[in-house]
Length: 136
Image (cartoon, rainbow, N blue to C red; front, side, top):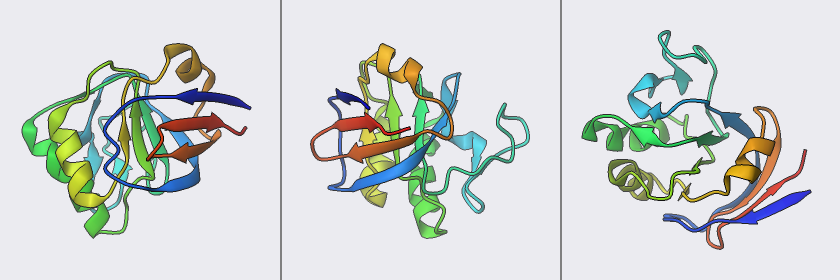
């Protein structure tokens, strides 16, 4: 089991174990359908659901309207367990949406730890302390 402590905006006191969903490129939350919680057809992971998963992306990008996606996902029951990124700074619109939806958002994950995480791995995620543990 590998453990890493990250800094970030927590937005939640959640502690959970959940499956990871790793996205290789910068993630625009507008590529996620908030009604189904799945990636749109144009995304490399088209059709994959993020519901209950911890989404790991190198960074987040897109229009400021993306801040509503975490809230819409929460309203439709398709919210992820949380968002993680290796970016050293957070993308403010995503943080706003995470606060409104009680979805953890952590940034600054060590890149060596991130490289060890694969889609389907189980992560232990403590939002309030920033602790991420790879359970496998």
